Image (tube, rainbow, N blue to C red; front, side, top):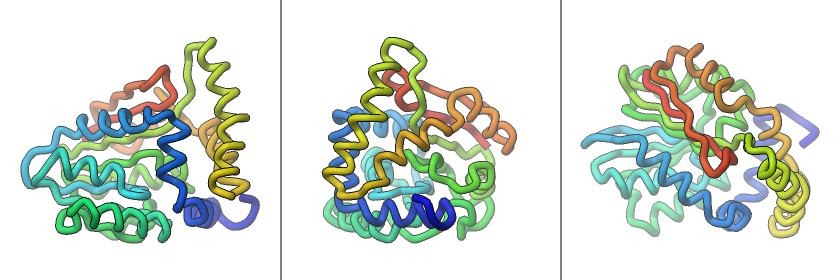
Length: 234
């Protein structure tokens, strides 16, 4: 990932690993990522006839979970990776949800939607990849309706020291080797720990949400802090 803008590198990387992305996600997390996503979707607490925007939707896991849990919700999922979206569209079609989930190419930092368009905005493991994090958060705020809810699921770093040492060894040494072998991509799973290491998490990320105008900002560490769910209200 040495050439071009971060956005271009991220798009190329996810296009390259899209065919193995779902398998590796679930395999490398030992399936715990299913639980994290379900918890994030549950925290949306959507009412009838809501509109949800899922940013960096990838292969549409969050969009599908939300559609199943909230039957009257219409969902738009956006991503910059064409290959990830192609797989997401296949999944949506197979599950009979094409009438309620629409996936499209869009830049998270220049969303093609009007102000105050959505009752809720979600993003799972996507904000870490934003080229300009503050701009991406500002766009989330802009497209949310007043009193709309934001739910973000993102990797973080464990604070319990004995577990953190085991986790860091796995995350920095074992995971990249397995990811490289299965996906045939040299950079994707070395990028993952690198991006997590520099991402602001916990209270630091809460401050970014507050600076963008969000209120009632909360964070919920998941599985010893491997991931964190953030919730906020416009």
